[in-house]
Length: 191
Image (cartoon, rainbow, N blue to C red):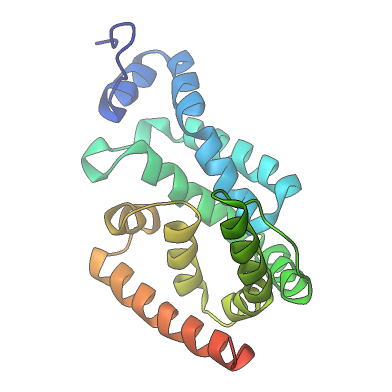
């Protein structure tokens, strides 16, 4: 059942369509590539993100018959694939966080001029401490934090992406937050 013009097909409908016609997988790519690319870029940098995002969709296309809409949506399935591929790039990710911990750069901020200046200054001061703190998290905690913070996934989507119970997501996130707060506080005692 193809969605009418102007309607957005559900993930289950898309899965049914690309099982019948593999060419319909392009709709999955069009819908989710930007989200996967942004997530990978935030973790690895723009250069490697392009490769990881493309590889995510190659892996997904190859495994499209194994996608089960009963277990979750395409979005969380793709984020799970991307997270597994990023795990292969851990050394690059760790180097990126160490480099961020040594540098201070501005990031674009919206709002009034005063808000942009204050937010930019605060973010620049916190970025090195946050990057250093992220390197202190274990892999599971870092994956959960970054899927929530960079991927914008909810607890249920993170659980689906990492194939872990939702309660584990909550406990890992709670532990990670405590570790991050403690580490940032140690790095920036006056901040």
